[in-house]
Amino acid sequence: MVPHILAVDDDPEILEMLLRVLSREGMQVEKARSAQEALVRLADHSPDALILDINMPGMDGLTLCRRLRQDSRFVALPILFLTALGKTDDIVKGLDAGADDYIVKPFKGAELMARVRALLRRARRADFDDDAVLEVGQIKLDSATCQAFVQNKAVQLTATEHRLLRYLMEHANQPISTQHLLEAVWEYPNSVGNPDLVRAHVRNLRCKLEAETQGSGAHYIRTVHGVGYMVQS
Image 1: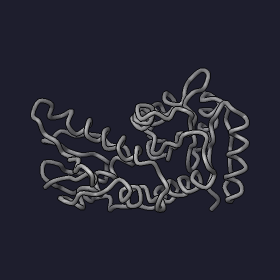
Image 2: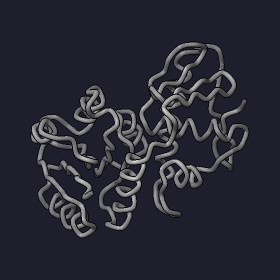
Image 3: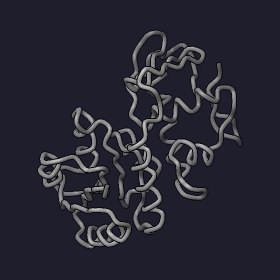
Image 4: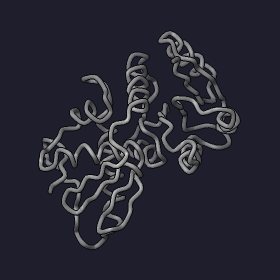
């Protein structure tokens, strides 16, 4: 089946470049030059993945991403931000809006394709049984709903946050490097992917998990300096 990608950017040159790169790999590409135009196209059918700019006139990409994540039809839609905003705070905002991945312009076609392929691969595969529930320490994770429970309080996770937390829980008490997580959770080839992607997702996960226990001093995802991250049982 030919993957269908919706590319949203107000720069026609970027759209043409995406069309060339993705079409060359056998993908069907639909273009939109604004968030409003993207919403019209999404009303007709859902693509297999969305590539989205942030800075656009009218509704920006962050707003569109949040809006889509609030719609049950697009909760699991793979979304990749492709933007000139490259600071860590910008990446955090993009992931916090619900994106799965983030690439900074200018970009290399080979890396973009590696990221898009990984997004599509993860979306096609059911990683876990619908009824799989995992408990480690004070965290319970329900893969059927992408919810974590901390002290019996539910925390809603994005699909990527769910995969990341599940992997850390399945390897509890083992410090795991950012590169290993990029390969195991994001399924990127070696040397592909930005470590800031992992750091930003870990930050968002911590904020969600620890929001329910503020003031208790609880830390559910530990940083092992010089090594990586760990969930402790």
